[in-house]
Image (tube, helix red, strand yellow):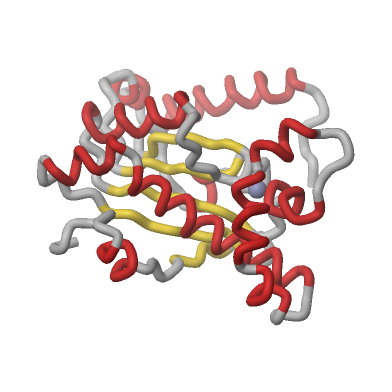
Length: 213
Ligand SMILES: [Zn+2]
């Protein structure tokens, strides 16, 4: 499965890729060098098994990206908040995707704990809270894998709700910007993305979404 053992392989591949692109389209990089106009903001897990460009067959320039362990929307994360602000106010992105995945190490760490990696444990502590809050429902699934998969889905929904609670998003709604939210799960077992149903009525009830969403 692992095809490249040496970092120099990556650099060689890059040269081949650039040459191939030029061969099929001599203006490819002139186009790419123009200011970016991505349509989508993607917030996903850092896991190496989810190369978004490949699994969605999207091209450079199409997706503005933020990734962190277990796709968290954390109110103290200046990096993420800057990205959301830039995406909405400068790039005018209208679709935001939070993508989690099954077999997520961050979700597992939130449930099982880690021995020494206490910074990671701290980072995923909102998922531990989610787990404890829904513990009965999750344990009724009767199977650890199913339970972790379901928790991964719940985590995506919870992070979308956090996103709606940010002042940046609420300000965008007040100025009547149309922004659409998507909660996706990548199933590593099949290679397919599941588009999760979102609790829109509940969010409207909390005044997190405009009535005409
Ligand atoms: Zn993950």
